[in-house]
Image (cartoon, rainbow, N blue to C red):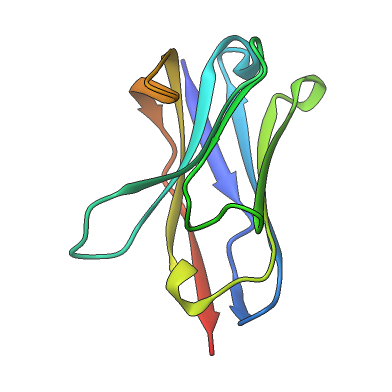
Amino acid sequence: QVQLVESGGDSVQAGGSLTLSCVGSGYSVSGNCMGWFRQVPGKEREGVAHIYTRYGWIYYDDSVKGRFTISQDDAKNTVYLQMNTLKPEDTAKYYCASAGLWEGGRCTRFLNWGQGTQVTVSS
């Protein structure tokens, strides 16, 4: 059974930092294109950062470039999202997902999703 579990979400003041973790089970994250997404209620889900470690490919949304860092620890079968200089507009529920394809500069065809972890940034 494939499962992704996110953790690390919290409430933080603007300018602060958080590290989100996504632990995979039932498969190796190193063999997949992994992505972090976020969604605000009533709005579309947006891609935040993707990583395909096998090929060294990384994608960042423009809104988080220079502030967020996606990384992967294969030994722990975990994908991380280091979030620095957080802004109120970063407030969202963050999801981890896995895909098997990279296309157009991003992971595509996401099939497995975690349940999400809430990040709230106050001004």
